[in-house]
Length: 94
Image 1: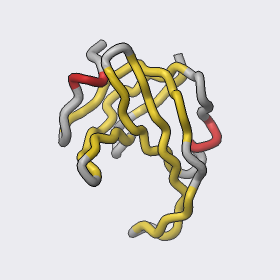
Image 2: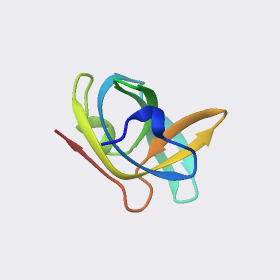
Image 3: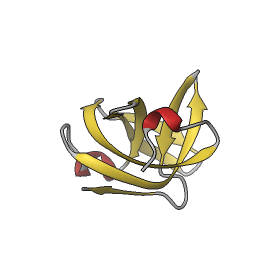
């Protein structure tokens, strides 16, 4: 499985990584109405990236868990790469 260092903006992400940090959830307004979001830091042997967790996913994961992201979406947000699940992405503990 490719590492975090190989990820590029506007492309799919398939990675295995460990959650090293999760921010406090915050309320945001979206086109679908209010929602909660938190930022998780993922790390593997090649680097780190921010994972955006929405709604119920925030409580599903904790620091120290190893996760596999399949078909996630990488974007450039304020100059930093981050990965989200997009429409077809999946996240699972491994």
